[in-house]
Length: 100
Image 1: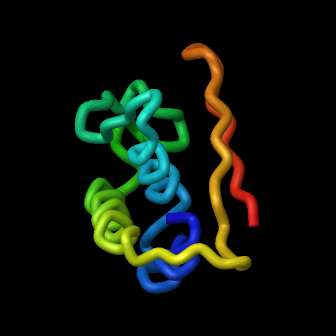
Image 2: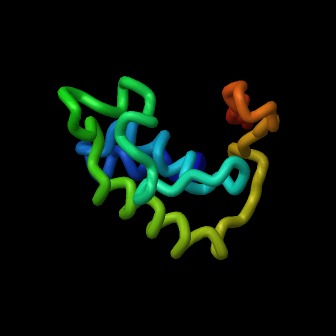
């Protein structure tokens, strides 16, 4: 997903960093994140505005579907980005960084 993020945002200017962030969380296995099951009050403040989602569930689902449909065709090369994820204790935020 991180290799197509710019294309996703260029082709759909309504996609914000919030939808990208939620899609990234949705792909993580540990800890598991299920956008359909998480309560709004459990999301970071930037994801909620006036008690309502400050993001589009549909755009997050579209991002996830796009990645799931295309990941099998991905070919790594010298220009590819990849994520480094450091697992941390449950009460500490997971460290995530993108590397070229």
